[in-house]
Length: 336
Image (cartoon, rainbow, N blue to C red; front, side):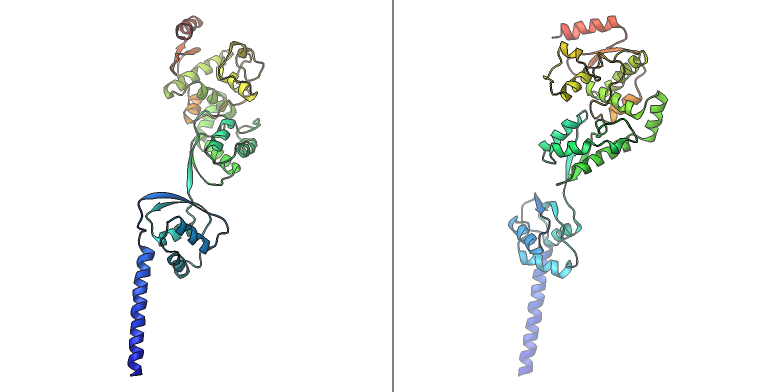
């Protein structure tokens, strides 16, 4: 009689164990019954497995804390749950949550740096979108050492902070952002481009300076090579470049730009004033994109020496001063 009771108890225990195992497997492997959505979850450094489970339960990412803890102990106890910010797409299984945290698949924020921003404007942009403080970025980008092989006269990284869409984790440092942006510049400015610069009699530094002027003069891709040609033609003739954005840059550097260029500003005594000083300014006035760099290296085959805004973002180009003066009267004086 006792043996029968023992057998029955054993069979019952086995059935209960199998039932529990099946139920646990369903809970562990099934998707959480939740509407589709994304949740940004931050696991702080030093958090215990139990604290992480509590956070996941609180955020309604998992249904049962004990299932998470049991699954971790059974299958992943040799692994560490990594800290960081994660983007969790619901619905998700408890098993996949554990895999994500063990593999450290942290969320990378897409950060777009537009063409033509200055170093200070990039700093303000990054601070505005809560990636890093402007002060930290400016401190990192004031060190020219990453670019000295391209420009041994650089005092900072202005011109070499390549505009692109990047992906950075929360808490990224200014040094890492700068390192990534400069690396992208070096990748874009290929050996073929360096050979082309030599063919033109330009250093990489001079190409970047010229590209920054082109970038600030127009946002229209089909105009960039024509504007480049104007600057190349004027440089060959030792004519001053008369580039308004260079003065604006100088005014901004001094903190006295009023939002518009005035006649008296054209007399500003600054090496960046291309109305006074011939040749290229001493450094880039912005961080140019790929199209402007390419335009600086491959100008259009035209003989234009002048251009003036048509007040719609585009320009009218002229080969002679007489033609240019007519265009100024038409688009700038009468146009206003």
